[in-house]
Length: 402
Image (cartoon, rainbow, N blue to C red; front, side):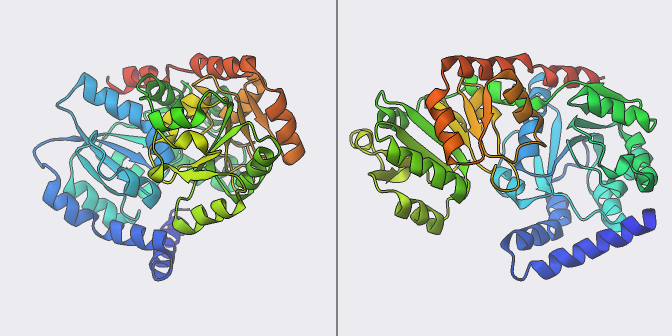
């Protein structure tokens, strides 16, 4: 298994190098990984130990963020090293002030791992959700570094639970504690002899509650709503937008706000070409004129989690593709949440449906029926669902602070 893994890592590195010549994301990752050791040699303080937190991408960072900020709050002198695997995390959060060092995770080769631990002293390591880099984890064990994984979720189809994955599963013994989201994950781990799991839920619930409590008014969005029913589409893709635009054209009294997942110019123009009613981009709107528009298009990042406070119904994009985006950001505000058909692997979406605050649609007819029938009670159920699942961060901090 180890030989197969080592070979696979080198093949993966070669693939990223080749892809970097024509793929922007691959190029950023390849260049970022190459610059790690130069960055650490210039910026890492060799006289202190860092709490290392690794997140694959932006979503995992948001799960780890409450832990980072509470660690800093309880001990302002602590030093945080934050690493990312994906450019979609690093590029957005490379200037995040909650961490002292921020860089890519080097490719998981033995040589890179050795250089990494020679470049920075690690006090403890915290991996978020799905990260199982064998060489890094074994090095944590070798250096007697307490290692944890938080907000983890396991399912029976993972290699750990197959006959051919027994050797791979051994890496799970490195973790001092595996903080899992549900009882099913804990039982799966126990079935292969891993007895260090604790069920604590998902830190994302704590994060969205915190964001909602710190929300700021957005005068342009408030003026756009102007007392009318407002449907907010968050992280939408083209298929999502087609359904929403069709609904708005049939029901002209509603307002539609679209915050697309991709805000490059060609996609913004594509949305505008489909709209038959008045629209305006957020960057060009002002409080005096925006109320006359029927559709407000958000053409920048960072506002969506606060925008949801104005929604009467929230539609979350991605369900007609690889999977839905963050449904909790809207639900926390007591808003009924709707999304496309591909949601089954998202526990929070399944939970919202069971609780009566979330709804899945597969076509326009279903979307229209739900939009016309949901009420404030569904929104209250969505909020109750989020509040019921808070507290994971506090449980984790008690354990890792020992």
